[in-house]
Every structure is written in C-alpha cells, then in structure tokens.
Amino acid sequence: MPPEKAVLVIHGGAGAPSKKTLTPERQAQYVADLERALRAGHALLKVGRPALDAVEAAVMVLEDSPLFNAGKGAVFTHEGRNELDASIMTGQDKRAGAVAGVTTIKNPIRAARAVMEKSPHVMLFGPGAERFAESVGLEIVGPEYFRTEERWKALQRALEAEKTGGGQVRAPLESPAGRPYFGTVGAVAVDQEKHLAAATSTGGMTNKRWGRVGDSPIIGAGVYADDPTCAVSSTGHGEFFIRQVVAHDIAALMEYKGLSVRAAAEHVVHRKLKAPDHGEGGVIALDREGNYAMPFNSEGMFRGCVTEDGRLYVAIYPES
Image 1 (cartoon, rainbow, N blue to C red):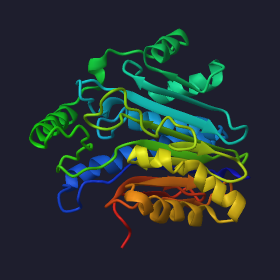
Image 2 (cartoon, rainbow, N blue to C red; image 1 turned 60 degrees about the vertical axis):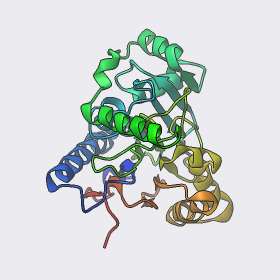
Image 3 (cartoon, one colour; image 1 turned 90 degrees about the vertical axis):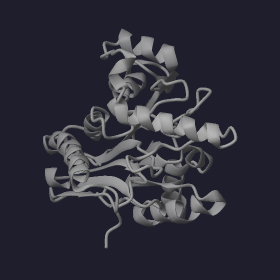
Image 4 (cartoon, rainbow, N blue to C red; image 1 turned 180 degrees about the vertical axis):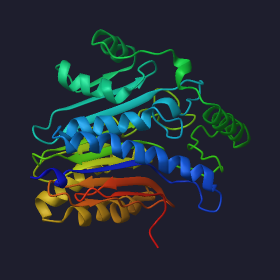
C-alpha cells in the first residue's frame, strides 16, 4: 500500500456543547488541538510507522490538552480526584492493553501500551497500574497536574445539583455551557502495511463514585481492532457501550453480516444504542482499505481525519 493510503481518524468526545453557545474562539481552540493530533499521528504513518504508533501519538496530544476529558483535562470524581482510564489494541494479532482508575500517570495511553507490550496482562488498575508504569519508565506526575478550574467548577455544579435533587448520585460531565457531553478521546488508524490499531482515553464521568469504570478501558466496548474487519474507538455514556459491547459489535456485523464499516457503525450507533434507553454517544471506525465512519447520536462529536489523499478534515456538528 503506498504511503498516501495510510488513514487516521480521531475523536474528542461525543455530545459537544450546543452550537448556539460555543463561541468562535472556543471552537477555534478545539479545532486547533484536533488538527495537532491528526498531524502528529499522520506524520508517523507517512514515514511508514505502524498504526499503533500513530494512534498513541494522536491520543497523547489530546491527553495533553486541557480541552478534552482525558489526561490534563480529566473530570473530577465525587471525592475531588481525577481517575483516568485508557486502552489500546492492534488488529494484526489482537494484542491489547488497558489501565483504569489511575491518578498519577501523565499519559495513560502510554501506560495502556506498556501493559500490552511489557506485561503478561491486558488490564491493570489503580495503584498497581501506577507502580507498573513507574517501573517501565513512564512519566509520573502529581495528581494536581490534572486539575483544571473548568472541570473543578463542573464538579461543584454536580454536587450542588445532587443536594437539591433528592440524593441523586449520578451526574453527567458538563460543557462550559452546562450541556451534558462525553469527552473521551480516541484514534483509529491503518498503516502502509494495512494493519489497524485503535486507542481510547478518558477521565470518565463527572461526580462518579465507588471506583466507577466506564467503557473506555474495556476491550470490545470502548476499543477494538481486528485487521480483517475494522478498528473502533467509542465515546459516550459508558454503561450503555459496555452492555452493547459496541466496538466489537461493529466488527461482528462486518464479519458475520457482511456489512460495510459505515453501515455497521451507523446501525450500532443509531439503532442498537438508542433502542434500549437512548445510549448517547458515537464511534469512529475504520477498515483496512481506508473506509471510515464517524456516526454519533448526540448533538455533536469532536472528530477529524486525515484521508488517504492527505487531506485534513475536522468537524464538531452534523454536516449540513
């Protein structure tokens, strides 16, 4: 496959703020960081690096941005902590790695890859995952590194709503405009050798309790990669994505029903997710021929791609 056939697709979370309330300045910031992530990953694909390197590089850019609910911009738990989850998978041999509930690893996606490549396990959790990450030389930071004032204020609003809402303990992540959205980030790529990879990273849900873990580090729900079918990264209300095994379901529809990547992804997002109780969110999905889909059933989804001809595309809201 010639270099121009390498494709990278990313997302920065489904359920973007209302188009009426997102200022042009803020939108420009989102677009700039999405473009930086695309360029970081695609630069590696162009020189023949594997898809695994590209998705890791793209996700790291988004983890380092305070705008997205992953890494630096992670939301707060009920106890006022930032607990991060991430996963990564390669379609060539279905190796996978994940971390959950970590609080001191600067880039959780790097830790997920290290679990895959430097341990016999698939998922590590909490302090154990942090000790492992330190043992393999990953960058460790103080918990205060992840704090942003915007996310802290979102927690305070959720706590106040909980007090006045009769003890309700579940509150969604909020946008600057107060609208619920899901800020998980992710990437899928196909490289020059036609191998696929997928990666997902998140801070979870504002005001989450009791060690709650969503779909992002769950292989088959928040992430999946399989060379004969597709690579998928999910974003949305994690409980629904886990129950529907969303990422793997898309691959299964392609394998057993013969659907295209677009048809499979749209069926899961627009029909299966919404059928039981409106599972809000979206996915990015990519096959080894460079065909991709970015469906979502929320008001918007931060997303972008570098197509096989090298063109950059970034969007937030549905196309008119």
